[in-house]
Length: 132
Image 1 (cartoon, rainbow, N blue to C red):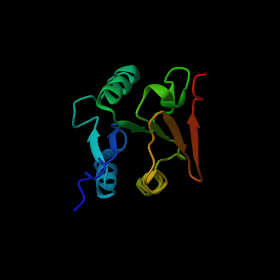
Image 2 (image 1 turned 90 degrees about the vertical axis):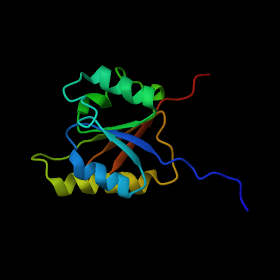
Image 3 (image 1 turned 45 degrees about the vertical axis):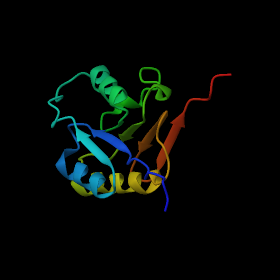
Image 4 (image 1 turned 90 degrees about the horizontal axis):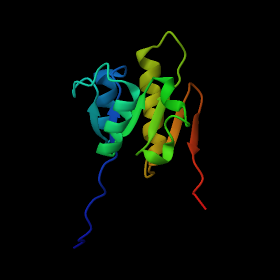
């Protein structure tokens, strides 16, 4: 009999622009998901939202390109930031495809301290080097 407890599922907060289907898709992939809209954070400024995610140790998943600014939001401070940079006009299928790629790429990995930018073709990962 093993006394090991199962690993906690990855935790995410989906920005208001990703909707219920995005949350359902991540939950089906084993993630613990909160949403900005369910927590009455719609319209919150970027700083407030990212700090709530930091306090809750949740990966922020958003279409808002402002979160890709590593000077304003240094990845090392957060449980992870994922920015979807997808072609416009946005289509539900494209968003869901990007979220599925995120699920596949993050399997068994921590996003803590990392910024992922997911576009239509690839995932770019940014992590700050460790301090000497």
